[in-house]
Length: 339
Ligand code: PEP
Ligand code: MN
Image (cartoon, rainbow, N blue to C red; front, top):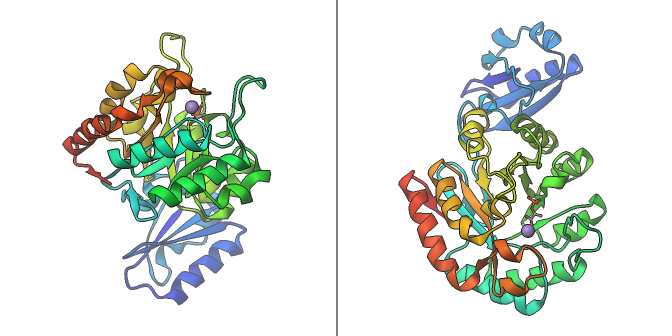
């Protein structure tokens, strides 16, 4: 149930509604907008309905949210898109963001040269994994703490906010020292204790859709973070597993407009992991911008032939600026401002 307070509602009236919601064992999630305060009442529907809050002081209206995801639903924000702001860069609500960088932090030289190229090319954030979820335990697993240290150096050098993956809740403190956006990888999308931990950290989070997860499951993953009071959640479509093997995964572009209808959260697209082939990355990026994505996260490497991970899908750093111009132009066509 969503309780929309009147514009002129007082703090006392808000507190009184919260107390009444909590009196029936439900959770009250207070969201203060610029004009309105909205209280999400999460718990037994019938008991909340019996509170008869429709007529309570300061209450404008009570709207039932029928979806299993409540805080993530469009209804919860009465259709107003959430804008996530990271170090002055905005994503969502018309702001388009390009996050770029190597799959994995491999060395100081590799990271800093790629970081410099994406910064020059107009990226708004730098991506790069220190902890990597690899299918084989024998593959390079990332530099770990040393990778985080290099990311910090790249941030100091370029000023770009950092997007990096957290795989294990035991590393949360180390990752929080560097990450401006914590990435939850596709393989961890349903790691609910990790999601809740990130929710409690309050740091912005990028949740990648699981390889075989439905969009409703993706929104339920977001709900775990939102429920902890962390509203800075960005969703990412990165391709799903289908019978098709020609591309690494099947990029589900329909997910973007569907998510835009059902959630207020920003939605970005990862064309690199979906394609597995750099030649497809630019056309897929243009398509993602055209269907209304709020941004793109893309892999870039200064020497992809020698990359330790995901080289075939990495854009050449030297070609990034041209790529960014092209994608930015497509985002502009659908009214997005390139951050
Ligand atoms: C990545 O972004 O490098 C990555 C491993 O992505 P995903 O979790 O989508 O496979
Ligand atoms: Mn990768």
